[in-house]
View: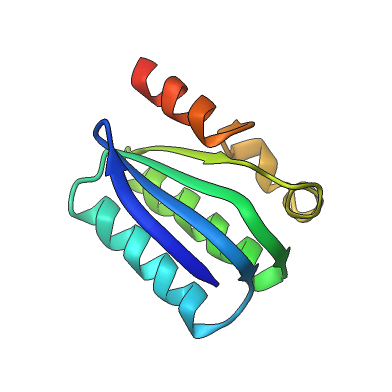
Length: 114
């Protein structure tokens, strides 16, 4: 998995591509997001539009990010869910606790209103 992270308009953005599975680089991404939130990133977007495959470990990573943001009172949005990623998230019921935007631009626009 590849991660492009940057900041735009006070929002920390993570753009993912490849497979979100139980690989060490995926857990490195999780650690990076948690560290950003712990260090005060109050607004975070995770763009999943480039994710090709996701397994249960990937769903667990997303759930962990949701929990970390919730515990720190950070605003968190996910964008660009593909049919495959959305299906996995729906099956485990995670969609109920996630803030979703269709695109990264939509997520940025919604974050600016928060």
